[in-house]
Image 1 (cartoon, one colour):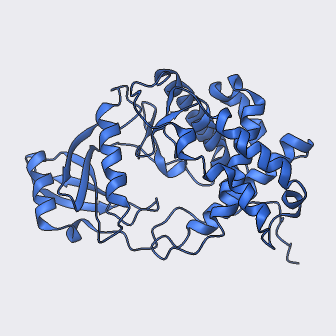
Image 2 (tube, helix red, strand yellow):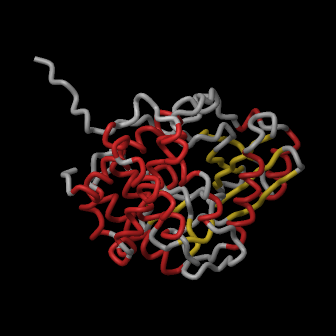
Amino acid sequence: MTTAPDPRVVRAPPAASGGSRVQWSQIPDVVRAAIESQFGSTVISAQSQPGGFSPGSADRVVLADGRRAFVKAVGAEVNPDTPAIHRREIAVTTSLPDAGFAPRLLGAYDDGQWVALAFEDVDGRSPQMPWRTEDLTRCLIALGEMAVLLSPSPLPDLPRLVDAVADDFTRWDALAADVPTDLDPWAVDRLPELADLGRNSLEAMDGVALVHGDIRADNLLLTDEGVVVVDWPWASLGAPWVDSLTLVLNAAVFGEHDPEAQLNSSPGLVAADPDAMTATVAGLAGYFSWQGRQPARPEMPTIRRFQLAQADACLRWLRVRLDGASW
């Protein structure tokens, strides 16, 4: 007998660029030559890395002198938005403290069209999917320690997180104005409350800590020494617990881990104001519910399903926090 799938279980596709990721050999010769010049050695092999939504290159390379590195590059013709994202990451990673939680930037290239970054190669692994409890606990502890080091931010001129998401976290207003026919009935019945919470999330997330802003499994590497966080272009100033909260959400999407059960594993979330966290989850729910219903992006074929899966997890978490429901 076939058992019907549990409708509460959140299923999401992995972060993927749709198989269109640029390969090392496809990067223009002048860009590759510039990176090799900074290395002082030629690249003899390159292995493209899966994961993430960017269609740009992402390669672990081996140099002729035996060293290893990680290189990512993109041009405006590949994706017009990504070069600016790489430029932001160069600015952030150049100034991060050398505390072992982020890879060291070895070199960068920018000719106005193509932008490339070269990092030290991290000898680590991504967390196993679906999330295992031991990996999740380890990452939550590491993020709590990172938040302490980055509070207040060593880069005080970064943009404020609340300014960056001001439109995104008030999407419940847009959803209420034109209610999607497939929106969760529970959310439809609570639209005014959810809209208020979404607006409150902007104050709730404000702060002076340096926040990574895009924590999920494919941006974390587990090493023998600890946890390394990669991909820093969205760094901003915000509340120190924001990254831990988004990791808990990621574990709910990819592993069915009860978010409430993870709070005590996170030093940052234990200290956070409960109402602030609830408001932030509501803001995220509105953003993902709206964004996941936008037109498809062929260069990122899984992103809309990924966003809707996160919306479902956020709404399910809100039921727990607002109604006392079980996960």
